Amino acid sequence: MSRYRAFAIHFGISFAIFAALSALLVLIWFPGFLFSTDGGWEGIRIIVFVDLVLGPLLTLIVFKSGKPGLRFDLACIGLLQAACLVAGVYVVYEERPIAIVYVDGGFFSMSRDDYLQVGGTPPALGVFEAPVWYTVEIPPDPRAQAVLRGEMLRAGRPLRTRTDLYRSFDAAELPINDAAPMRDLVDLDRETGALASWQTDHPGSLDDYVFYAYGARYKYVYLGFERDTRRFVGVLDVNAPA
Image (cartoon, rainbow, N blue to C red; front, top):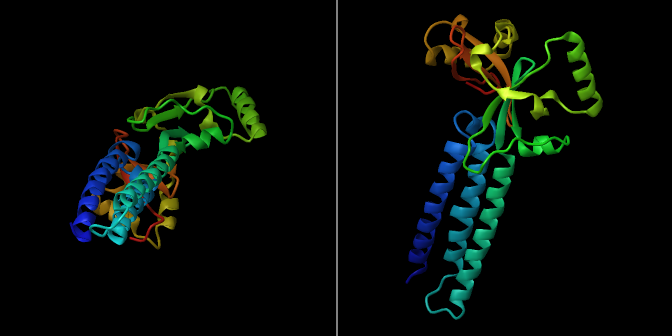
């Protein structure tokens, strides 16, 4: 067997693993817009380097038919690739968003580490479960709110980490008053043309939609909802070049 055939076989096996892991990232760990805003692309890059580049390339370098100790070399390459891949996937898994939280007029993506850093308890989420959307239920009484916010301020802990105040997110309850003022979006959009792109991709006028700030891991964007139905329809990225 030539080294190029060995490389092709190794690459084919690695590609099958890559395809399975990519499906996991795209469909479950970083579904929809989360793939571009919260680290899906970065996770794919890690897997590509470890799985499709590192292992097959080492095989191409060391393989020589009839070489003494070839099996041992290939076994070492396989173990190294597997160890690096497990480590890489673990990092991506730990940093994936496990919750999208709405509080104080905006959305935030939350990883497991975001909770642990402030002494919070992350919501339970299985390996094959997509992120869950929540709303932080703040007491309506102003005095109770003041007490709660004071406690969080003294603890150095944001409200979005209070899992005991979580309830299932219902887009129909989104208050219009919390939406970003259109004049602010226009100001942010002067150099990007994102609003023009939005109008091209979505029917009607901008007044038919409301936008809420979204603090993601890699981007600060806005989530767009239909004004009348509150149905989520897309992401307005006013920070990226058009």
